[in-house]
Image (cartoon, rainbow, N blue to C red; front, side, top):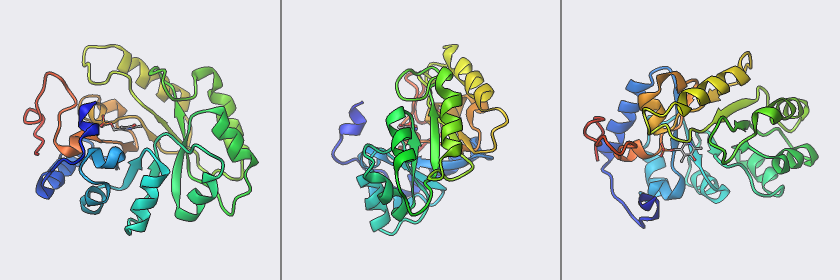
Length: 235
Ligand SMILES: *Cc1c(COP(=O)(O)O)cnc(C)c1O
């Protein structure tokens, strides 16, 4: 996606505040995890995070981004959206209060084997149909049980999933993803999150405890056939 490669992009801070207010209006019950990966979609990681007052937490791709935010004084929760890459990262997560996704056996094994000074907040990422990152339906129970048994994992466990094509409003897959995720996680007592920009705007039943908007914060429509103005976003 070309917008992620842009070295610098500009958004005025009134527009950022307006877009965050739109997000709150659209998803009034959910908490907002503002996604600032890829240098805040080219707008400057720290610049966006410091000015995103409506955000309850931040989502980043890499641990370096999370550490930059902590170094610049950000105290809100920060989640590694793709999890950690090396067991050596785990003590760094504990020290800096950084949350992680778990989506594969390598991460699960590393958590079980680590000796940590405290527990890590973990979001179990479920593959509800995107077939990219995530624990498949038939692996789900094993991951839940092992994570629950693991003292290095803060309880309650949290749960998330990501849509494959929520921007295609006539594609039946999104509804199937929502139904699968809700049925797998039914009765869990941890927080849940599915919706990124397109989900939170157009698939209300996916809003759940946390929404994870990226592109709409920056005033860009997630839909090919709707402009940012159609969605009442500002740039
Ligand atoms: C990038 C990303 C988002 C934000 O997606 P947008 O479509 O830009 O809103 C949300 N969740 C995860 C896991 C992501 O990787």
